[in-house]
Image 1 (cartoon, helix red, strand yellow):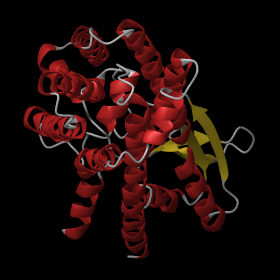
Image 2: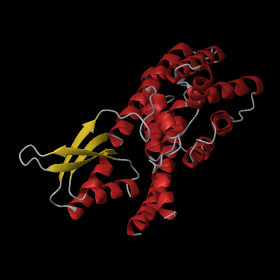
Image 3: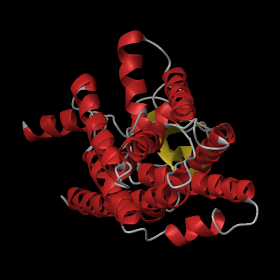
Image 4: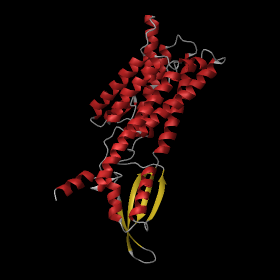
Length: 343
């Protein structure tokens, strides 16, 4: 009962932590898009480029000055979420839906109130070197967008967007998600260049936008990869059942018990082997220090772990997205608990 109580408290803590991280990630992402990307018409692909195109069309054909970029962003974010929900089933986490609502709200707040207009004007209108200003917008916009996406992913959420299209296409046409994502972004950038062709230097804007998207991708990999590094843990202990219960009940992971023999004593030994995040490995280390101080624990950092409970066997970019659109594995725990309840 004590383990289950701890598990419940831990789950509550993790939910609060994840909501805070998703909210923070959406705010950072909205900051980057509204301060650096959308106001400067940087064509980086994704929903931001769709918003830029539609905003430009409205400006040209209505001459009303009405802002629609935030409305377009909200419609496509929420709309694509439900497209994914319809075609991929009930595999979308609540945090993904939450991010699909919170991100457009932050973007609308920054965009409608012109709260970040000073930053944009400083780098463009009031800057002696306009292309250098746009280049700085691309770099820092990419850093903010990448950081926002990574923080959201660390909080067990996803901003979704056009990557959901890649997942749907991959399911029905068996095309690699990375290929579909590249095609969609390339089509959007080309469409943006054609739609905004009356603007001066639109081709350089498109190329600078590609640099910004590249910076964002690197930022996601650096932040998300470092925060979610995994490791293989092997524990040699006489309290293998307690360690196994802790891993399954508290850490929510499955484990394997390997039988071995001591090289000197030829004594039969049991080794608990499990794949964990580095944070979980530290939690396990603290528990073993109390449960069996004489235990022997080895931690090996793993570059990547694919399979149930970790990254699917997909390309890196969409693997990170699909991880947070997948159902959380119970590692057989529900069957074990059900069996205990029937005893």
